[in-house]
Image 1 (spheres, one colour):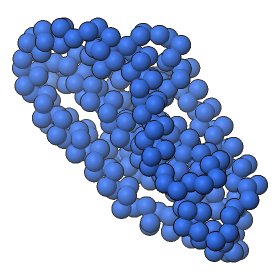
Image 2 (cartoon, helix red, strand yellow; image 1 turned 135 degrees about the horizontal axis):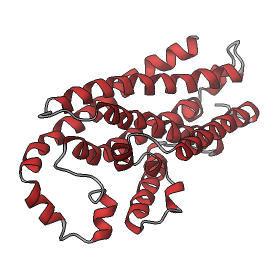
Image 3 (cartoon, rainbow, N blue to C red; image 1 turned 135 degrees about the vertical axis):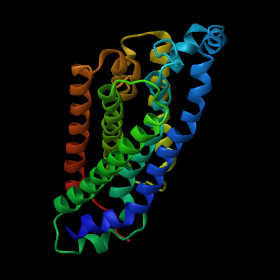
Length: 265
């Protein structure tokens, strides 16, 4: 419990900063909605001149930008990107911070098992993600509601927002496993950015090429904004795949951490 409390205390400022970034992103980009919805025909005519592959990659072939929920779905792709970077960074940092700061001997000298240590650290990341998403769902709903001229599908909006934590858990799990596999981890941010952007680019390729095989490679495709808005729900197969990946990576993290030779100072 002391480890969990300490981790939450140390990570609170970072969590709030990243949450603020997500909220500000939505706040500022929603300013673009009124002029776009007002001149929807002109915008559509301009976008029609873009190559079809580019429009697919950006998601503007399946989302109606003149509608409130459609426009929010368009910018939400980048919310997922920002949130994923934070989640993976947190996952990599939490289990490697003592090794990188050469204080692992001090941690393991305490009368707690390795299982307790890794459980507390993983739980701290999960707690931060839950708090972040609660704050984000409430604030994003208030922001979007301010532009509401007529009723929109609140259920679809909530499902869209709830997809954030599901993608974040995927990347947090990758962060966990990489932090215990990589022997000399000096900095987590470069690896985090590389991994997240590779998956993001794969998602854009999947949309651009319209290749159903690529959809299964990246979590950004599991929770496609257009599918959630148009169908009012998630694909069960993607939910199962995402959950299995999270469980496998997190479970493997436990096994490796419990047996790993941790370097002394």
